[in-house]
Each structure stands twice: as C-alpha cells, then as structure tokens.
Image (cartoon, rainbow over all chains, first blue to last red):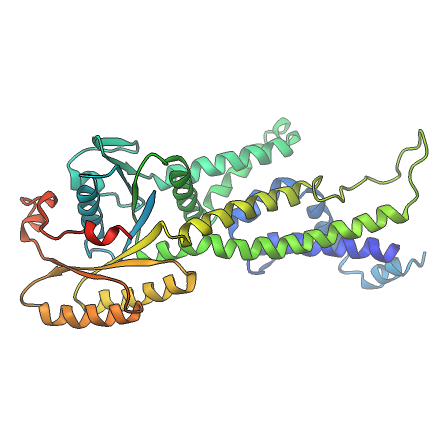
Length: 69
Length: 313
C-alpha cells in the first residue's frame, strides 16, 4: 500500500518533470503543451517540489518508503 | 473545399504565383487566399490595403493576412486567464500579472500559425479553395510537423497519466469506504479518467490534432512547391520534398518560376531532378520570367500560364 502510494507520487513527479523539465534542463515538449496543462498541474507541481526538497536526504527517503518510523 | 499551401525558398515568387493561381481559380470558384508570411505582401500584389482584416477583392476572391504576433498574443492572453483563474489568490497580492512573461516562450509563433490555419479550415467552409501563402521553408516545415510531434508527446503523457490514475484507483480500493459522517484524512484525488482535468485536456488536445493531421494528409489538401532554376533553390526544395515525405503531406504541383530562354537548360535539369525527387508522379510547370511584373508595370492577371489546370486534383 505504502509502496503503491510512493509509486503514484513518483509517477506524478515524472509527469511534472516531463512537462516542465525545461526548468532543470531536460528537453521540453512543445511549449504550448506545457502552457495548456499548467493550470491543472497544481498537485504535480507540489509533488515535484517535495521530491526536490527531500532529494538531499536519501536515507530518510528510503526509511520513509520502507515504513520505518 | 480544397486547401493549398504555396511553399518555397524566399524570393522565388511563391506569393506572386499563389496570387496568380487564386486569381485564375476565382474566375470559376470561390477562393480565399491567406498570407501567413510575417512579411506580408498580398496587399501589395493586389494593390489594396488589407491591414489585418478580411477583404473582399472580388465577390469570388477574398484576401486575408494573418497577424502572427496578434494571434500569439491572443492565445497567451487566453491561457494566462485560465492560469490566473486557477491561482486567483495571487490577484490579491497583485502578482497575477507575472504570468504575462509566457508570451516570450519559444514555439508560440508556430502554434499561433497552426491555430490560425486550423481555424480557417474549420470556419471557411463556404469557399471552394483556400490558398495559404506560407512563411520561409524552415518555419513552414516546423509548423506542418507540429501536429504530429505534439501527438507523440500527448500519447506518452496520456500513458503516464493513465498509470497514475490506475494506481490511485488501486489505493482507493484498498482503503475502506468512509463511514457516515466521517471525513477523509487525506485529500481525495480523482482516479476516474472522466474526472481528471489533465486527462480531459489531453484527450481534447489529442482529438484536435488527430483531426488536423487527417485534414492535412487528406485528399483535399496539397502542397505546391515553387522554385527557381538555381542551385540554392534546388537544394532547399529537395529538403522540403524530403520533409513533406516524412510528414506524409501530399505534394501536388511543382512550379518552376523565372524561366527564360537563357536559363532554360539549367531549368530543365533542376526541374527533372526535383520531379524525380518527388517521386515522378507530380506535375511540373514552367513559368516564364515576366519582366513586366518585376518592373511593376505588368500585372499578374495576365500571366499566360494556366496554373489552374493542375490544381484540380
């Protein structure tokens, strides 16, 4: 269950990265596609942000996904 | 309704020939000619001022010039509005205007072009022919490729989105249903494809581009390639033919412009090689260099070549 939640989050992260990757230097889709979808990307952006924020602490991240408190 | 794109290197005379073809066709049919070139000269050719709005030149010939920058601006204003509606709270801080930088995004111009073509095709069913005079080759190929490139992107994004929704559904199934009066501890996310805004938008975009690609590749649409008997024009035309092949857009007619007695020999060589590159089945037409038009005391209404014969496809 926790794993599925994590998987969803990762997928959302990837989705946001693909659409908005030009911010971090990934090849971007046609700009207008990003612009079209941007209004609905509220949650994805938050996930993306959260992932970026947690990225420096891999250990905590791993413990979190394994459910170790 | 037949749709024609006049393409070619800058300066080969595609605007003049597009105008001449439109004039000849308009003697029997209703024709709309639209200039997509940012450096408009349709008005100059017909000797009228168009200034961004439709003009009835004769009852059966209408002229239009698309103002790309205005279109791009209008499109972005619409998007910025949606964005601002979503992030309404920013208006209280007076921060909503910052979204306006989006207008400098690359790629917006091609998109505006494509949108205007799509709208013209959709709204102008009353004409027998719609002729587009296109901007320089590079931009033309890019915007003609845009629907297909975009569909590829949309397909990949849809696949990921579908997975997200499936996983969300799984999670929703595992959690027990809420008891009466109980509120969920977490925000409930949409997991049905119809409820998901992003999925709905992706689907709408996908349908839109599918339709447009079908029209562009269809039997009523065609590209006319204009070129001159010289090396640069020949090379660029070869690339254009290749590009059109990749996009599976139908090339209907090759027109070699500015042919004189002196360059006839080169003209035949260039013409034959391009016709071979195009697969051999595309008709090739020679148009003589008319010193009258070049000196501005001739008129395109008197072009002796019959351009209309090959445009009936």
